[in-house]
Structures are given as C-alpha cells and as structure tokens.
Image 1 (cartoon, rainbow, N blue to C red):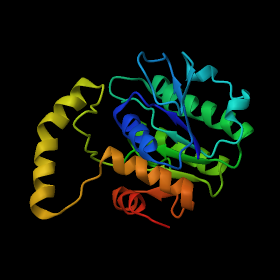
Image 2 (tube, rainbow, N blue to C red):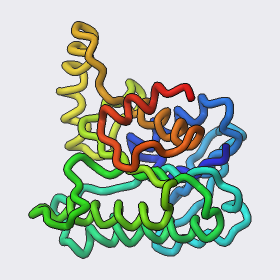
Image 3 (tube, rainbow, N blue to C red):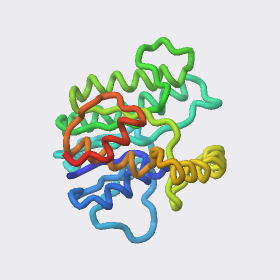
Length: 225
C-alpha cells in the first residue's frame, strides 16, 4: 500500500504513522509536512514539504496510484472566528482531498472528525457544523471510499503526546486513570494505534461503514478480513 498522511506531527497523526511503519504491506508513506524533520528516517517515508496546504498541488506523479489518504490534521475552534476555523478545517481539507482525487480517484480517504460533529447543519455549535460540512463533501467526493472517524477520548502512547498544552494536561491527569480502568475491568479505550490500524484495515478490506464512532473504530482495528 502507498499511503498519504496529513497531520503526522499531531498526536493522532503520529499514532497513524507508527501503525503504518509497523505494517509490512505498507510500501510507501508520503507525509505532507510544513518542515522536514531532522534525523534518520525509515526509507519508506517520503516527505512533501508545503508551508500552507491551501496551496497544495497534487499534480506531482508521486500522488498517482496512491491507495489511501489518512487526514489527521485539525485545530481547536476555541478562540477562533468561524471564518478562521473554516479556512483550516474546511477549505484546507477540501483542497488536499480534491487535489488527491484528481490524481488517484480510487483512493480511500479516511478523515478524523470528532464526536459531536453534525452533518445535518442544525447544531448550535459552530465547530460541529463545519466538521459536518467537511464530512458531507468528502463522502460525495469519494463515494463508497470515504470513512469518517468520530472518536471521543483517545489514549496516547507513552512516547506520543499532543502538541496542545491544554490537551497534554488533560491527558496527564486522565490517561493513567483510563489505563487503570482498562486493566482492572477489561474495558478497552480507543488508542492512537487503534485509529492507525483501523485506517489501514479500511484500506485493505474496504469501507463497511461511512461514519464511525469509537466502537466501530475499535472493531475495525481488530478486523482480519
């Protein structure tokens, strides 16, 4: 599989990247990044540096024959106007999706949205309406090949943390409690690796359900056929 990951610097994106690196059937991982990180990297990784994804151009032959795009980029709506939030959440996402669709219309597009996103456009919450609009556009752009993830709380791994300070504080307090509950009750909480494995399985086996909440993502992560 050849996959594109958008947002690999964030907590969820890092988890998806780790899952992809562990997958033997992933032959190439194309990362859309603002800046190429330093250090040694897996030879399967290809970096495409783009300072502003609103200017993303998918005409490079590198984007032909891509099997999947895992879109994990996003921002909090806190303190933002609807116009500012829409530019990043709606406009940027659709710019990337449309460019990739032009080169690889058969690809599977998996989008990390959020629990509470509203595709009906009736929510009183601005972020929920904008996310819902994005979802609807992606489902129409990739008919039968788009999956929308609506996770709630996501457990990070020990070596992967959110770049948002308030989220890091929240995870520091809650994550150990969640892991203790999981260990003592057997209840499974959604992890960033689960999200990555679910994305890979959707690419392998096809989209079974377009809008996926936490139980759907967990079940998909465990699929074997």
